[in-house]
Length: 135
Image (tube, rainbow, N blue to C red; front, side):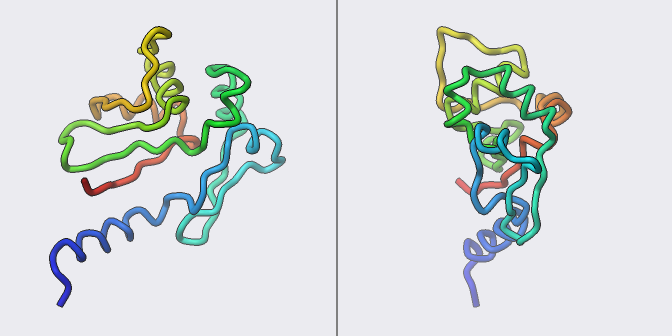
């Protein structure tokens, strides 16, 4: 019989089947006629061009080569009431959407309160996704 941790990990993997097998850069997606990625469950996720264009206005041109989409919004029971975003450019995009970006404070990850999720998801519904993680 599997132990409780194995059961939890298996269930989290099932819940996260909507995550991408591999993420693509903004620069690459902007070149595609039909920007999409393949998900772990084998289906495809399509990005709205309008969102890609919005994001490109928020970052420097060279950052489009390092920004991988979708931006992952990590949710875990460890940070009850909070979520995490990782990646320098990813954090920059999220903070600009939330009007919290500080040019003098470059971060590679940020933990934010969950009540901000609706604003992010309303503005970037196809370029952000949730991931449920165990820590």
